[in-house]
Image 1 (cartoon, helix red, strand yellow):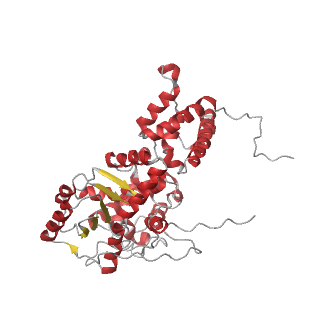
Image 2: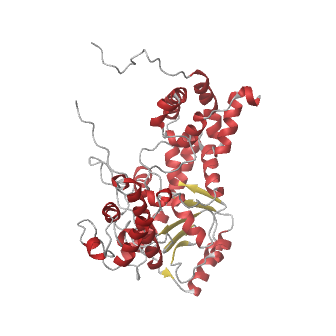
Image 3: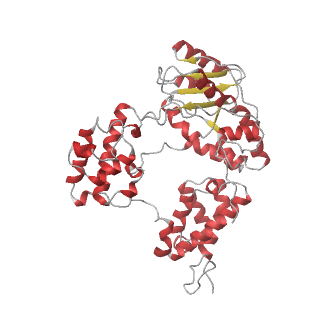
Length: 434
């Protein structure tokens, strides 16, 4: 078998690609705005400018517990680029009034909108360059990759994971941040034109409107279950210990505004949960129990483990997380073979349709919507509504956009009607033959 060539990571060009010229700031680096007078000047300049506004935010992921913005970058024709330090202000609602109903241009809007909303900034309309790239079928949609592919310039990315909460911010970091918004205006024009040419501009508008209207995500159910290595926890008592240790670490991290993994890593939580030591010395003697806060907060860790040990059996968490949707697809064949056949048929047809329109299948229709619909499909005889119409209505209830419904409702209705479970006497196409 011949090995397939590896795909370069997103934002890294292929090795044989000719080097693109480096993107440089057009207007030079502007000073960081961190005074009321400086912010007032930015508000006035951006309020008097016209056209869309490119906007980005830098957080301190990996360093801080909070997801707040530590730098906000903006660019608008007629106003240039502004780098605003939001920490001295806490609220940028004056800037929101200045921008009015201008279109925002962002890259991966879902990442930045929550922290911008905290500052009183919320778009009336937006254009997401990452999402546009997905709809257009670009195989890699990181900002640097799109800029190199479409604009023909190479971006610096060496400062993407720095601690933006530190002060003062070095000039190279600020140049990196300013370049992110400087190129967005040009990128939006190119992607917008391509969306029009391919007939996907209407799809994009619906997607962007959905992003603007979407409610903030609520808290995750049982977030402690995302602990890395949780599968190594031995039994429900160990799961309870993971939960108690995770919640203790989360409270400490929140109070100190430090990312939880910098206190003790997930591996230390699982190690202690399986061992269930009763005292500080035994806990700290565990080979895998380490981290900056292992000894400093030993008393809290021992208390969390004591709580887990003393729980009644009925209060222990279940081995599997509770989920309000259908079971995992791998269990469908045993629990409902007809539903499994529906899903198999629909997945294949959706993949073909996505390939036809040159976009990822998950952007054609959210996989969770597909699973929910096909596990419990509408019954036309009970509702008196034609199946395709009932499918369309259910997809809209789930949150599918009109363009997605129009493309997929007949396909899904066909899968519901025509899919049949496999014949147990038929070994299937993948069975070995003598």
